[in-house]
Length: 258
Ligand code: CAA
Image (cartoon, rainbow, N blue to C red; front, side):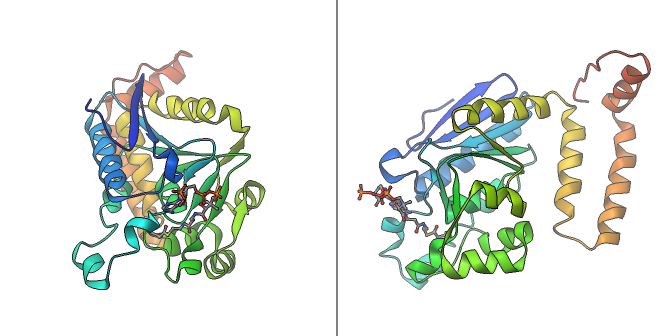
């Protein structure tokens, strides 16, 4: 795969790993980094040999936000016409499950990209926040929506209106984080989760991800109907037949992703 300037990419079996890599700027998300993450993630998404994607940063910072130095000189017409940050929607729309492995600062855009991932693993040293208000602006990569859905209105208001940071205990209690792990084991644990997901039937995984995502976009009755139809559709899969046969025959399933 081609070399990138602001990220590192790696394949670990059926797992694609994207490491944010602007250490001098605490992985601040500039335009190049956004373009590169979206490009790398899209390549992994199109690759049937990849069943999960891990996104991580350094031990000090997952990402300390959108790049303030890049934004500072922009005017309203600039950001409107270029539709700043809209490219991240393509990351949120990936079909392959994404696992955020967060250590250190996940602030502003960093918190927002972590929340765009399907599940969030946090190291004990992780700190989350939406400090945009301290810069005279507001979240711009979905934070006001995804944080509110994840932790509820009161805590989202607390974080977004004061700009304070939240540690992992609070983040886990609030439902933002799926698991907290020792800092030195973060990548290992994230790869284990991703490997597990990638060992399942890919079409079933797509269906499960789409069904959960539907909970954020629809009413309960529409979502339940969507789930049921999608559940019915899995009965067309060879992997569904194999999974149930393997259970009955007391053996491991051999999924062919078909
Ligand atoms: N953008 C650009 N550069 C950043 C940055 C950011 N978001 N965050 C850190 N950096 C740079 C610093 O400017 C510094 O560079 P120099 O050495 O050239 O001065 C380098 O990274 C190291 O940072 P610090 O010296 O500040 O490190 P620290 O350990 O003292 O503090 C910190 C860490 C508390 C995270 C602090 O860097 C900080 O507050 N960063 C900004 C956090 C923030 O406000 N994020 C929101 C951005 S706006 C946004 O994200 C909008 C949106 O929703 C789309």
